[in-house]
Image (cartoon, rainbow over all chains, first blue to last red; front, side, top):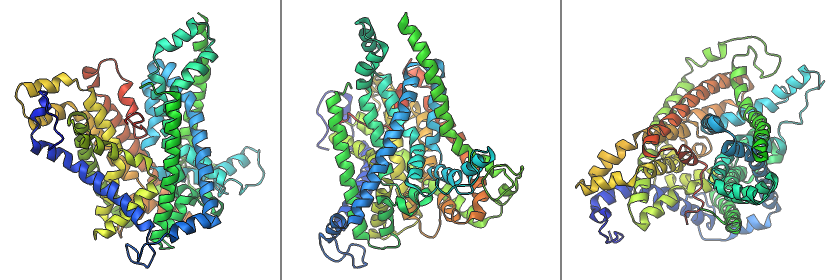
Length: 294
Length: 288
């Protein structure tokens, strides 16, 4: 292979058979399943729908519809607002937990990290389902409020609202946010905070001027890993959101299901990826502004 | 010092907050086991008494059994594939010294930045194009992709934690690349391999968003649950099933977590925090 660097290091002896065998599985998966599959989406987005797999002819009509039909603006905006609220709620509530883990947990740190990450590995569908039974008309929350005498009548106001979607998603993606923030906080050199207090900074000033800015890369990474899956979610709106909470993921799913207009669904997907790309670029810009330590 | 006192006090407040946070994290999920033992169709207070009847309905349900089998088969194959890819991709990323290996590793972690619905539809188009159509193989491919960032990140941090000198010694003593990989690096990272496999299995076993697009006539367990959610009468059965799944998931995740840190102290002393950053949620933020 041409990429072998000619140095006296052991790597120079790499047999090309070994390299080929080791690169093959990853190359197949990344090239075929990721890049080629995403390329297909992009290709299909520029095709007209005639019921065949790859469409009939090239056209910009799908994108014209996405941009000109107010429905898609409304739904995209709603998805962005819901995802932004979920991201904000998740990151803000996770930060103190990560802070405690990094600076106060002591010997309990291992156990707490384990408890915080465990829900990660449990079924997303079951976590959303749990909220459905909590928020339902004859569900846990209503019946508990009536039992305790706070409420006299069950209310429909919990389920099938955008608020239900925000709460459910914030809960489902809560564990995603803690780890990146914790890692960022944990790698701040102790000398920085010591220097701040030696120079007379109060604890809060030291937090605001030293700890918080230095943890921003972790905060931004946390925001991204929550934002990306939530903005394209279609399960939570379907289970707890009701018709007023249709999100962009719901529309994409419908194009590949009932509506059966794959090229248009592909165009919606491309639009979502462009939005995510913008968010990633903004986050990267913000990251470089805050100055990466690592 | 006042600094120290503040730390203590702040820690106390924060400690209470962390407990409240954990309650919020676990309470909704723990309602599923609670009501799975409740003698009522509805998940509502007051509790109506203890029963195991919902668990009894799980047995002899042929649709459920075949969905379970399907999920197990797919989970094992997908986890094997994802772990194999995770091992090779991260090994070549660290020791391959080639831009190609680094690029593959970066792309392998890309699915973190793609919503599941788009992963699902892109694979749906792909499997239709190559003639597979929605099928078990399609689901396996999808789950390899979904689990790949996790296995890459776990294996990468494990390989990185093995002191460079060990591998160099093997190569200097005349071991070939293949021998060094198979006889030195793989045994040293075995706990992480098992851990990556278990977590990849869990990801596949619980995955819903992508499998929704790729399943043919044979549903997986999450798809079976989804199909039952429309019927209020079957909610208690879903809760009994969900409780079983949660219990098994907790055990597997705990075992994987313990395995992942096993033996690490020998190779990377006093660094328990380092591998913790390598979760599914980790972004290679500074990789470029």
